[in-house]
Every structure is written in structure tokens, then in C-alpha cells.
Image (tube, rainbow over all chains, first blue to last red; front, side, top):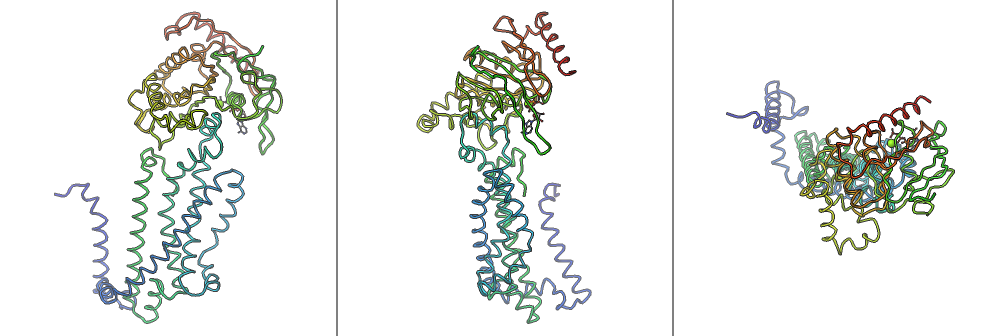
Length: 258
Length: 262
Ligand SMILES: Nc1ncnc2c1ncn2[C@@H]1O[C@H](COP(=O)(O)OP(=O)(O)OP(=O)(O)O)[C@@H](O)[C@H]1O
Ligand SMILES: [Mg+2]
């Protein structure tokens, strides 16, 4: 017999398998036009036939995502620390950043393409722009929410601002930082793909756009599945990373704001 | 009279959006070296503010604050502090939490790496005296509230400060743990004789521990009475049930009731 716990573990897999099966059955039973919605089997077939271009374009998307994300991490950390450093900068810059963040980044893509031409650069920059903000906000919030009493304890010992930052602020912001990474990587991925569908000559977004204009619906969906797999894997890696690096935040029940 | 801590006629207003809050006015207080002083008073009367003044975390608009004869014009650099909330760092083991001041206060700061083993032994011994022997390697979230408060007390004392500032350190604890920690604090004080200023709402706590009790008025706070407690030392918990002790508690309670009515 399968115990309740085991059920819980296999449940996600079971549900995924069941929905794919349902999809396949529905397509066959109702004879859905493969141009509207290809059956999973057709998508799998497209995967087998086109695995080379899918793999190559996935690698491009992955690369642009990671470069944009990497830049966002470095800048986000630095800016987050600067913004969290003083209440003055925090209150001054925060509204500016919120305003900046409320611009839909998709709207910026055409400008980036005009500036940098079609290619990887706009994709990298879009990935960067879109994933930068959550990192800054989380790091800054982690630092700025240091308990005032703790700051008093340290200041009464003669601690300088830098001491407080190194001993408390920065370690304290770690769970916020790692929490933001799993959000940021997903956003960077979205940014890269969006930019690719607007103007690029490689990447999964580009592949899907081309397949679409050639009426190769199974390939479009194969691209979508490839995106889903990449996105889930990257999220999982950073979620795992988060739980390992800042175990104390999970254990002490003080979770970071995602 | 020059004490270890001297506060003379200070006035302090917090600036706020809807006008300022006058927290202290005409407040004077003197605490001798090695004295155990307690400050009691109605909620919001400025007790915590008084602590911040003494440690130089805020500056008065008028009046003078001096510690060891020197006017306080910036954070003190020597004072140990503990609050109602233990504020231990969850990413550090208890022992490393206790050692935190050593990483900041001179001259320990410069020696910290070289003499880490010696400091560690010191911290372990201190933890043992408050009943936390063997818990140094635990993380704070593995300790109960009372244990965390003990660790917080150790953190305030590890660098052997001449001045210990306690702001309602036992307020969040149950009665038994609280009385246990009174004794811990009493023993530490008997041994090292640092100067203590303890803010508390618990009159029995104040009478049990302190040499002098300062009663503050409602906001803007000033000291309305100073009561010496001449109960013999060392005091055992049983003293709390003696008539002399109970009388003092009643007397102080009446005073605070009067202060609150005004
Ligand atoms: N940072 C601050 N900004 C503005 N007003 C403040 C600030 N801190 C305290 N106050 C005000 O100053 C007054 C005294 O505050 P304080 O914290 O010193 O009181 P307290 O005696 O410690 O109270 P409690 O017993 O409740 O802890 C209060 O009326 C409070 O509103
Ligand atoms: Mg207070």
C-alpha cells in the first residue's frame, strides 16, 4: 500500500502525467486541429525531429538570461547595500525605483533594439533591467529593517556604521537576497525571451516566432515546453541554493520577503 | 555631587511630523560608581529615552549628561546594553553572539583573531555562570526565551563594561524565570560591581536588585523621588516576603499611582 506521505510526494508527478494524458485524449477524441492545439505526441515528435535547433537556441536563451542576471546580481547587491546604508538614501531613492520598476520593460525593448541593433545585447539588457529591481529592493529592505535596539547595542559599544553593516546589515539581508534570486532569475528569463521575440536572430523566442510564421505549431509548442523546463530548473536551483545557504532564516522562522 | 553617571536638568524633544514630543524636561539623576540604580515610572514617560541619553545615542537639547566626569557627546563606546527583546543574531552561534562586543570594542577588537581561544574560554565561562554551560554551540533559535535573555545578558557583560544599561530586560519572561534571572544578575553584580541602570515596570524587581530607585513622573519625565533601599546584601529571594520589603513596594506603588493621576 502507498502511504499518505508517499502520495504527497508522487502527487505532482501524477497530476502532470494525468493532465498530459487528458490533453492527448481530448485532442484525439474531439479531433482538435493540430494548428490550433497540437497533441502532446505531436509536440514530442517535434522535439525528436528538431532537437538540434531547440538545443542550440535554448543555449542562447540560457546564456543571455544568465549574463543579464549576473549583471543584475552584481549591480543589485551594490545598489541594495548603498540604498540600505542610510535611511536618507532609502527614502529618497525608493520612490524613484518603484516608479522605474512600474514601466513595463517590454516597452523598452524596441528602444534597446534601436540602440544596440538586433542580437544578444538587447536580450541581455532586458533580462538585466527586469531582474535588477527585486534584488535591490530585497537587499535594501533586509538592511534597512535592522532592529533599532540591536543598532543601539552596537553603537553604545563604539561601533561605526561600517561595523554595523558588516556584522549585522549584510548578513541579515542574506535571506532577502537569496529569496530575491529565485524571483529574479525567472524574471530575467522572461525578459530575455520577450526581447528575443521582438528582435533577435537566435534564442528560443526567436525560434518560436519563426516556427509560428511557418505554421509549425508543434515546434512552437516544443519551444514553449523547452522554456518551461529551463525556467523550472533555474528556479529550482536557486530555491535549493536559498534553503542551503541561509538555513538559519528558515529555521528561525524569519523568512525573507520573496 | 559628582557621581559615575550625572544627568543635570536635561530637556529632550523628539521631532515628529505632527509637532515634537517633549520626552524629558528638567530631569536630573546621579548614579554613583558601582551603584545599582533602578528607574521606574509610568509607560511612555521617557525611561528608554533616558537610557539613550546616558549612552550618548541621543543628545539633549538642554542640560548636561556626563559619565565618569566626561561630558557625553557621542556614543559611549563602553556601555553594555540589554533590552526586553534579546536581539541575538540568528546566523551566529550563541557563543559568537556573546563574543560580538569583542569584535567591536577596543582593545579587544585588535586582539580578537590572535587571542580567539582565550576569548572563547571567557565567553564559555560567562555562559556557564548564567546557567548556559554547554549551550554555546547552539543557535539562538534553539534556545528558549529565558535562555536567549541570559545570552543577551552575557553579550552585554563580556567586555566587562563599567556601565550596564538594562531596559526592561526581564519583562517578557514568566515569573519563575524572571526571579531566577534576578539572582543571576545579582550574583554577577556582586562579583564585578559594575554600575547598573535598570529600567523596569516591576517594583519587586527594582526593590530586590537596586540600591536606589528613581521614580519618574508622567511625560515629560523627570525624577520625582529617589528612594534608597537599605535591605542587607546579599539578598535572597525570601527577602521579597519580608514586611520591610513589602512596605517599600507599597510605598513606591502609591507614589507611582499619584504620579499617574497628575
Ligand atoms: N524615536 C522617537 N521619535 C519620536 N518620539 C519618540 C521616539 N522615541 C520615543 N518617543 C516618544 O517619547 C516618549 C518617551 O518614550 P520612551 O520610549 O522613552 O518611553 P518609556 O518610558 O521607555 O516607555 P515604556 O515604559 O512604554 O517603554 C514617548 O511619548 C514616545 O512617544
Ligand atoms: Mg521603554
